[in-house]
Length: 345
Image (tube, rainbow, N blue to C red; front, side, top):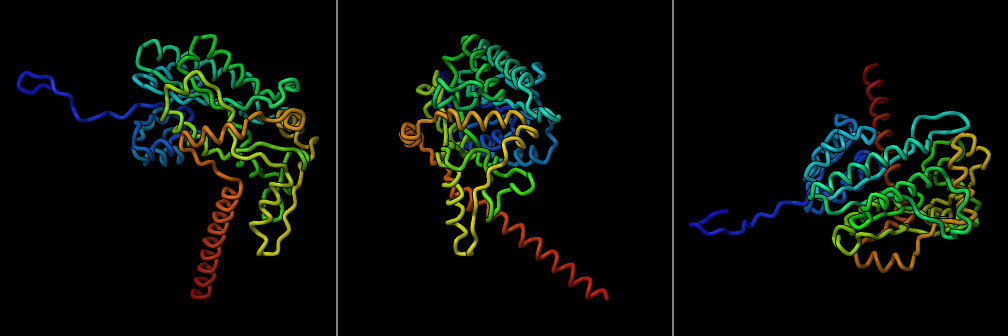
């Protein structure tokens, strides 16, 4: 600002503007919440429905504004990316459900991804965008045993190739998460996670890398804290590497005081492929090759970026606490209604 003819620097520093695509998805919510806590960013939470309950919840967070946008509508992305300095991009292969196919459609995700990267390119060429973070999926631990890989893996890897083709790798950090803890919360009868059952899709003795979906937000926050260093890098990220039996034992130790026996229960492969074929292919892939996160290397990076990964134990304890709160609330409501019925008599 001007003061007596002399230019004086303003003490006010504007927050970095970051756009988060698919903001009401599991990943998007975690990223928006984590960045909101820092008070360093003005966050554009991009979603198809700005009136949904999830969107309204995000809008109540600090430094968050809702912006209507759809990965299948490039023009909406063009508007949403106007003037942003950072973009977090993620895509989804989920599109309805059909028997023998499931809900995963590879071409649907690729179209989203190419639309996204094209608009990232346009935003970069305008001169303000300086960092793009793309959420992909972990590469194989054993590349020689990569094929056949699940379609919803190869779609993300094809989008990575498109980033390179458009010469955007120099401003891009690719985060490649493994399976989510949240995937254990399936609704398949007899295979739903509980104190007695820990469900899985692979054999009980296979190592399986997993991560809490909210930890992706921690990684985005961490990478942005050292933005220049982590551009042009791709990182396989995970929180745990346990066998199915070890996962079940983790839950067993939490509920041991209740004298409950927790068993690891593998969902039959034929059932998986019938209901969600690509997840069946993924299960084959995990047993044959496995996710390739380097757990020792990750510990060093996590220390550098001040990331405390969520352990499976902590995630399970939080889940059980939530379940207990829901049960207690339901019980109180039921007792209250019973009392009211008696009173009315």
